Image 1 (tube, helix red, strand yellow):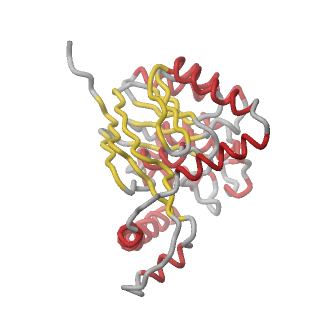
Image 2: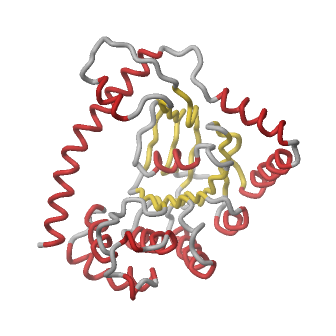
Image 3: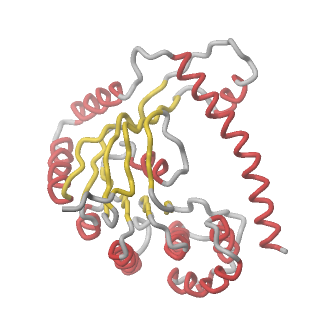
Length: 306
C-alpha cells in the first residue's frame, strides 16, 4: 500500500500574541534597546500538529475566539507562527470576508489587483475576467467601489477571484456565512470539484451542516488547543456535546468556565525578555518586508491605472 501523500503538515504550531502592547509600543521598543517592557502574552494557538492528505477537505470548528482564524491565517501565509512549522506543497489561497481586497478600488480593479498578486499575467486576467464576474453574480456592481459593497458582496467577489487563480490549497474562513444559501451551495459544489481535482480545502464555519456536507475530516480547536482531528462526523458529535453542555450550564458556571480556559491560555513562567525580543525581531523583519511589499504594490497599482 503506497504511503499517503501529505501536502499540508503542521508541527507544534504555536502563536503567541501580546494583549498589552500596541503596534506603536512595539515599534518604539525597536529603538530603545535594553529597556524592559511589561506585557501579557497569551497562546492564540498552542502546539497544534496535524497532517492533511492531498485532496482532503478539513472543517475547522470551535467556539468564538478559539483560534480558528489564527490558524487559517497561518495556513494562508498571512501571519507566521511564533513557534513550530507549517509545510505546504502547493499554492495556498485564503478567502475571508474582504481579505486582501482594497475598499477604495472598484470590483473590477480588485479582480485585476488580486489576480496580479497571485502571479497571473494581464492576458490571463483578461481571459478569466468575465468568468470571475459571472460566478460572483455582481455584474451590475463590478465597476462600483468596494466600500459600497455589503459583506455578502465582498464575500462573493473574494471567493470568485480565489477559485479562478487555481490554488492548490484553498482556505475558506467564514466567507460563506454572509451569503445567501443559493450562492453558498454553488460555492460548495465548486469546492467539491476542487477536491476531486486533488486540491486540499480548509473550511472554517459555524455551520455543522455545511461542514458535514463539504468535509471528510474535522479539526476542533478549543481555546487555542487542538482537541481532535478525525472523521468529520465523530468530531462534530463530540463538539456538539460540549456546546450543549456549556449551553445548559447556569450563567455563573459559564463565566467561570470561560475564565478558567482563558487563564490556561496565558503564557506562564515564560522568559518575557526572550519572547519580547522574538516579537521585536519579527516586527522588524515584517517592516523590512513591508517596505519591499509597498513598492511592489505601487508597481501593480500603476500597472492597473496605466
